[in-house]
Length: 256
Image (cartoon, rainbow, N blue to C red; front, side):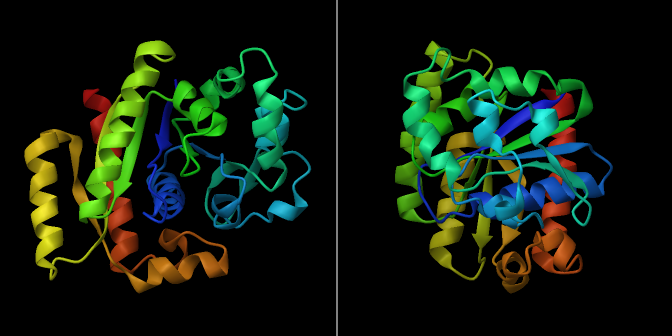
């Protein structure tokens, strides 16, 4: 049975997509079977996995409106080692269409259940807003991985996200929980980041992952080559940190 995780944060620009594709690549590298689901109409996670979003015959949009199955719509990224259920601009229209449909917030969950046995992990890259797309992701998932920078405004956004997760847990998905907080773009030389990091550990305790993803130029360069950093430059500090994070995820699942 696959473990399904949303990578979500209502604050934009915190490295959600970078975290999703690099965790997917890290998990694939250590022998896990992975499906990466791109729920963002920008399609950045699709392009960042070596898949051209303009060439896709079917996307997650077709899956949500039930004109294609996950098995039909997924493509394999040979360079990255995992499967991709891609997205492009079509997905922006799904917001409006889903409102009128039955079971609108459970459509992704139903679709992913059909390929559950084929994967160890399914990772869902959510858009930054709390939309019908994000809601589909949260209803399908067993848990949420929250990438965040150790900055003051990030703490503010975290409070909103925790409240959203509580509401979805109470009303739509009893399995949903926060799996952990991932500290990203971390620079240990900045005192404020160390202080916020300590606050997080004090407040969330073991919900904070041990792995810390450092601020890393190679991770930032990788998307322009259409690859996760883990594949683009495996020796970079950021890439190695994501492989460590993948190993920590596998261990954490065993204790869940």
